[in-house]
Length: 166
Image (tube, rainbow, N blue to C red; front, side, top):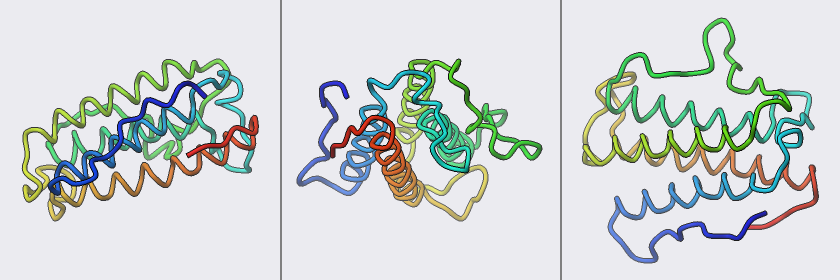
């Protein structure tokens, strides 16, 4: 893995700064844990499912766009790799898919998400998708979602090359 330059969440801050700090730490952890893998290893299937490091990162990019741009902001025609015909589309990767491109797309999706949340308060209701959620709920959900998949990436990385770490 590359040098660890993940942003630490604040030790003592308000609710919004704490939520965003933990989410940004986890987002950076996803990228950190994938760093140094070859394209082939990042796409290597170690489980019976389509779960791979590259697939998980593509999934997280799609989830970022779905929750923040579609659900919070009400945007339409947000790109997604899954569909009714192919609900696992984001997980379909090959060793020809470049990990650097996948990570760059994920980082772009995270930047888009931050831009959306800047325009809303934690108590604001989502304007698209499930209008019963508020921004706070989405941030907490994304901490859970990103943390869970970060753990999957951690395990896959250890199986791929023995690399472990926080």
